[in-house]
Length: 54
Image 1: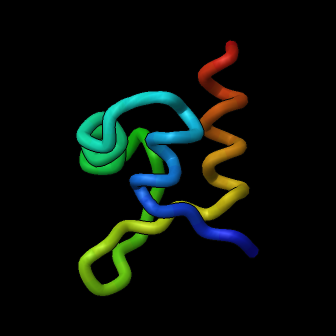
Image 2 (image 1 turned 180 degrees about the horizontal axis):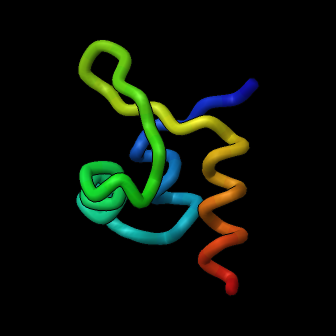
């Protein structure tokens, strides 16, 4: 299973890193913390993208 950092997700979605951090804080994007960084699974990211298309 692949995991993405907030920086990678910001590049994929074309938004600022702060926006990704806000989505995580507001529980709109599920992530878990490892050391000092948040990671999002590939399946979670795909689900988020699909839900945003609707």
